[in-house]
Length: 158
Length: 77
Picture 1 (cartoon, rainbow over the protein chains, first blue to last red):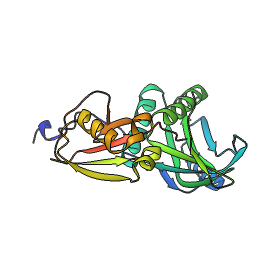
Picture 2: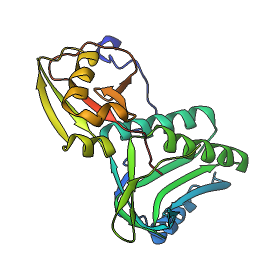
Picture 3: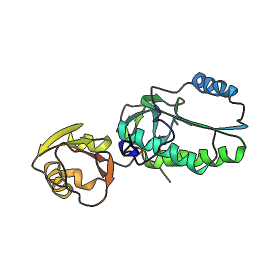
């Protein structure tokens, strides 16, 4: 059999990973993720971004929660693309992205990006870029729910 | 030729549903015209269009079974 059988011209070095989590991401989950990497002893640095739902005050109303929905398959494709681009651009040992779906209360965690590298500069640089791409390019929407149960659609800023 | 159209976020609220099927709209421009007539306030809102999960910014012809989506500005993270 020849290479013609493999008509997938785009070589992806990593499998599509599960990103979405129902409900808030817990601090325990984050701690466990860090613990799981202690066996990867080529790692010298981890950089972590944690997105927490903020009790924003908009027109005198306080946000009590954000409800996240997504065009899931399209979002997963984009998360995969973001991963692949980061691995291609930076020398990274490992990378994990987790994003919540459903209603996440103010003070709870809705986004966890975890990047590991041999030396710190790669992790620092990659993490920021990944977070900015997630906020700009992934088909996820947040509905900001106020204390009086009215709501508005979240708008991401530059 | 049948297509399925998915609505998200604010756009889903304007259209009053998460999805619907259409027959007889053959390309993006005719779908947009049709939807702007059907849902009056839709034209005043910002959205992008994807066809089979790829965003298109110019007119494209549809194929039978295509999955179209109207995507308001993303606000994840």
